[in-house]
Amino acid sequence: MTTLRADASARLEAVSRRDLVIDLARVACILLVVVIHLLMIGVGYSPDGELVVSRPLEAQPWFAAATWVGQIMPLFFAAGGFTALTAWRSLRRKGGDRTDFVRGRVLRLAAPALPLFVFFAVVLGGATIAGVDPALLDTVATGTGSPLWFLAAFLLAQCAVPWMVALHDRAPRATLALLAIAAVAVDALRIATGIDEIGLLNLAFVWLFVQQLGFWYADGWFRTRHPLTLVTLVVAAYALIWVVVSAEWYSPDMLTNLNPPTVPLMLLGIAQISLLTLLHRPLAALMRTRPAQAVVYLVGSRAMTVYLWHLPVIIIVEGASLLIPGAAPEPGSAVWWATRPIAFVVVLGVVFAIAPLLLRFEQVPTTIPDGRRRPGSAAIAIAAVLAFVPPFLVLESFLDLRIAVTGVVLLSLSLWLLRARRLAPA
Picture 1 (cartoon, one colour):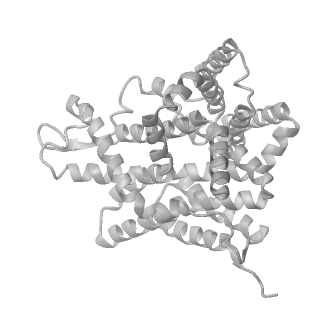
Picture 2 (spheres, rainbow, N blue to C red):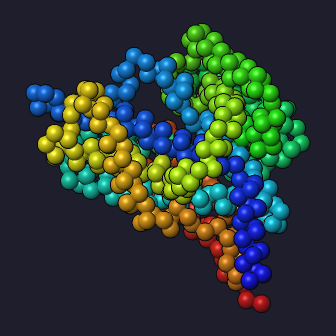
C-alpha cells in the first residue's frame, strides 16, 4: 500500500510539472499538418467526368499570406525543445548521461519510421514490378513521403539537446545570438552564390535556434515577460519577415522557406512562442477540462503514427473515393470544400484504426532491462547517423524505391545497434 501511494504521488508530481499547454500545442500542430495536406491534395471528377488531380489550397490567392500563420513547424520545434529540456534534466537527476538521452531519442524517432519505410518499399516495389507508370509512381511517392524530412531535422536537433542545454545554462543569450548570426550568414551566402545546398547548414542553425526558444520557455523567461513585451516581440518578428520578404530575399510562401530552412522560420518561432505565452491562461483553462485532456492524450499518444501515416492514408482514401459514385467531387469546387471535414474525420479514423498495429513502434521502450547493459557510445553515435540518413535522402532527393529500401536497411541496423546487450558472464 505504501508503494502504491508513493507511485501515485510520483505521478501527481510529474503531472504538476507538466505544461499541458505545450501538449495541446504539439497536438494542434500535428492536426493542422493533416488539415493542410488534406486541402493540398485534390483528386476527383469534373462535371464532364474527366479525372482531375490538383492542389486546391495552393491555388487560392490568399495561400501565401495564410502560411504566415499556418507554417507551425517552428512552434513544434520550440515545444520539442521544452519537452526535451525537461526530459534531459529529469534523466540527469536519475543518473543518466548524454549517451542515454541520445539513445532514447533515436529509438523514439527511428522505430516509428521503420514500418513506414517498409510499407513504401513493398508498395513501390510491387507497383514497379506491376508496370505502373513511373511518372505517376514518382509523383505519388514524392507526395506521400514528403513529411519524412521532419525526422532528419528533428533527430538532429534532439540529439544535440544535452550539449545545447549546457550552452544554454552557461550563456543563454550568447548561444541564441550565435545561432542567429550563423543562420543569417548561411542564408546570405546561399543568396549571394545561388547555391541552395549551402542552406542545408541551417538544418542545424535554424532548428537549434528555435529549439533554444523552447529552453527559454521552459525556464520561464517568456512567462515572466509583460504582455506588452510579448506583443512587441510578435509585431517585431512579423515586421522583420515582411522586410526580408519585400526585399525579395525570401519567398512570401513560408512553406517554400522550409527547405532549406531559412531565417524567417526563426522569426516565426519567436512570434509563435510569444503568442502561445500570451494565450497560456485561457489555453491552460481549456486543458483543465476532461474533453480537451482526452483529445490531447488520444492524439498525443499516437503523434508519430498520425504524422507519418496520414499522407499515405489520404492517398488511399482519395483513391477509394473515386470508386464511390458522388464521393469524389471536382477538386476546388464548393462541394469539394464542403466535404473536407468529412474527409478529415475519415482519414483520422483510418489512421487510428491502424495505430494499434504500430503501437510497439510508437511506444518502443528505452529503459535497459535487468540483466542487460546499454550499448556503447560509439554504437549509439553510429545508430544516430544511420537513422538520420534515410529522411535526409528524402529531404534532398524525394522518396523513391531506392531510398525506401535504403531506409529499411539503415533503420534496421540503427535499431539493432541500439538494442540492450546481454551482460558478460562474471
